[in-house]
Length: 115
Image 1 (cartoon, rainbow, N blue to C red):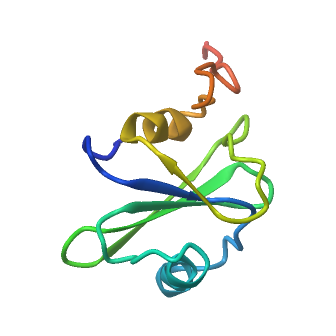
Image 2: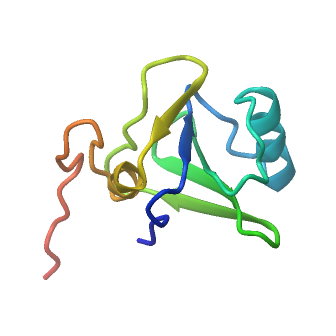
Protein backbone atom coordinates (compact mmCIF):
# COMPACT_ATOMS: atom_id res chain seq x y z
CA UNK A 1 0.00 0.00 0.00
CA UNK A 2 1.18 3.51 -0.75
CA UNK A 3 1.81 5.83 2.14
CA UNK A 4 2.28 9.58 2.43
CA UNK A 5 5.78 11.06 2.44
CA UNK A 6 7.39 11.98 5.77
CA UNK A 7 6.22 15.31 7.13
CA UNK A 8 2.70 15.01 5.73
CA UNK A 9 -0.03 15.98 8.18
CA UNK A 10 -2.58 13.18 8.69
CA UNK A 11 -5.97 13.64 10.36
CA UNK A 12 -8.54 11.01 11.35
CA UNK A 13 -12.16 12.13 11.61
CA UNK A 14 -13.37 10.58 14.88
CA UNK A 15 -16.70 8.84 14.94
CA UNK A 16 -18.60 7.38 12.00
CA UNK A 17 -18.84 8.94 8.54
CA UNK A 18 -21.50 8.30 5.90
CA UNK A 19 -19.52 6.37 3.28
CA UNK A 20 -21.91 7.47 0.52
CA UNK A 21 -20.17 10.86 0.54
CA UNK A 22 -17.81 11.67 -2.30
CA UNK A 23 -15.30 14.44 -3.01
CA UNK A 24 -17.56 17.39 -2.22
CA UNK A 25 -19.30 15.86 0.81
CA UNK A 26 -16.03 14.85 2.48
CA UNK A 27 -14.40 18.20 1.66
CA UNK A 28 -17.38 19.91 3.33
CA UNK A 29 -16.89 17.70 6.42
CA UNK A 30 -13.22 18.66 6.55
CA UNK A 31 -14.17 22.35 6.56
CA UNK A 32 -17.16 22.27 8.90
CA UNK A 33 -16.53 19.40 11.33
CA UNK A 34 -12.73 19.21 11.41
CA UNK A 35 -12.19 22.99 10.92
CA UNK A 36 -9.36 22.30 8.44
CA UNK A 37 -8.64 23.31 4.84
CA UNK A 38 -9.23 20.35 2.48
CA UNK A 39 -6.89 22.00 -0.06
CA UNK A 40 -3.91 22.21 2.32
CA UNK A 41 -2.25 18.99 1.16
CA UNK A 42 -2.98 17.21 4.45
CA UNK A 43 -4.44 13.70 4.42
CA UNK A 44 -7.97 13.29 5.84
CA UNK A 45 -9.24 9.81 6.76
CA UNK A 46 -12.85 8.75 7.34
CA UNK A 47 -14.22 5.39 8.52
CA UNK A 48 -17.63 3.83 7.94
CA UNK A 49 -20.02 2.40 10.52
CA UNK A 50 -18.89 -1.25 10.22
CA UNK A 51 -15.23 -0.26 10.47
CA UNK A 52 -14.02 -2.21 7.46
CA UNK A 53 -14.17 0.70 4.96
CA UNK A 54 -11.85 3.70 4.94
CA UNK A 55 -11.88 6.75 2.67
CA UNK A 56 -8.94 9.13 2.33
CA UNK A 57 -9.20 12.63 0.88
CA UNK A 58 -6.11 14.62 -0.10
CA UNK A 59 -5.29 17.59 -2.34
CA UNK A 60 -2.36 16.77 -4.64
CA UNK A 61 -1.84 20.29 -5.98
CA UNK A 62 -4.03 19.82 -9.05
CA UNK A 63 -7.19 18.28 -7.65
CA UNK A 64 -8.72 16.26 -4.87
CA UNK A 65 -7.82 12.58 -4.68
CA UNK A 66 -10.25 10.15 -3.08
CA UNK A 67 -8.99 6.69 -2.12
CA UNK A 68 -11.12 3.92 -0.62
CA UNK A 69 -9.91 0.72 1.04
CA UNK A 70 -11.99 -2.15 2.39
CA UNK A 71 -10.52 -4.84 4.62
CA UNK A 72 -11.69 -8.37 3.87
CA UNK A 73 -11.01 -9.42 7.48
CA UNK A 74 -10.66 -7.30 10.57
CA UNK A 75 -11.48 -3.65 11.21
CA UNK A 76 -9.59 -0.40 10.95
CA UNK A 77 -8.50 0.71 14.43
CA UNK A 78 -10.17 4.03 15.20
CA UNK A 79 -10.24 6.42 18.18
CA UNK A 80 -13.12 5.92 20.64
CA UNK A 81 -14.14 9.61 20.59
CA UNK A 82 -17.54 10.34 19.03
CA UNK A 83 -16.41 13.57 17.34
CA UNK A 84 -13.35 15.67 16.71
CA UNK A 85 -10.08 14.91 15.00
CA UNK A 86 -6.93 12.92 15.81
CA UNK A 87 -3.55 13.63 14.25
CA UNK A 88 -1.28 10.76 13.14
CA UNK A 89 2.20 10.49 11.71
CA UNK A 90 2.62 9.11 8.17
CA UNK A 91 4.10 5.92 9.69
CA UNK A 92 1.01 5.44 11.87
CA UNK A 93 -1.21 5.92 8.81
CA UNK A 94 0.74 3.25 6.94
CA UNK A 95 0.11 0.83 9.81
CA UNK A 96 -3.57 1.78 9.89
CA UNK A 97 -3.91 1.10 6.16
CA UNK A 98 -2.42 -2.37 6.62
CA UNK A 99 -4.94 -3.23 9.33
CA UNK A 100 -2.37 -2.97 12.12
CA UNK A 101 -3.28 -1.29 15.42
CA UNK A 102 -1.25 1.94 15.14
CA UNK A 103 -1.50 2.45 18.91
CA UNK A 104 0.16 -0.93 19.60
CA UNK A 105 1.52 -2.53 16.40
CA UNK A 106 -0.05 -5.96 15.93
CA UNK A 107 -2.22 -7.50 13.21
CA UNK A 108 -5.99 -7.19 13.69
CA UNK A 109 -6.48 -10.19 11.36
CA UNK A 110 -3.61 -12.43 10.36
CA UNK A 111 -3.44 -13.22 6.64
CA UNK A 112 -3.91 -16.89 5.85
CA UNK A 113 -1.79 -18.81 3.36
CA UNK A 114 -3.52 -19.94 0.20
CA UNK A 115 -3.00 -23.40 -1.17
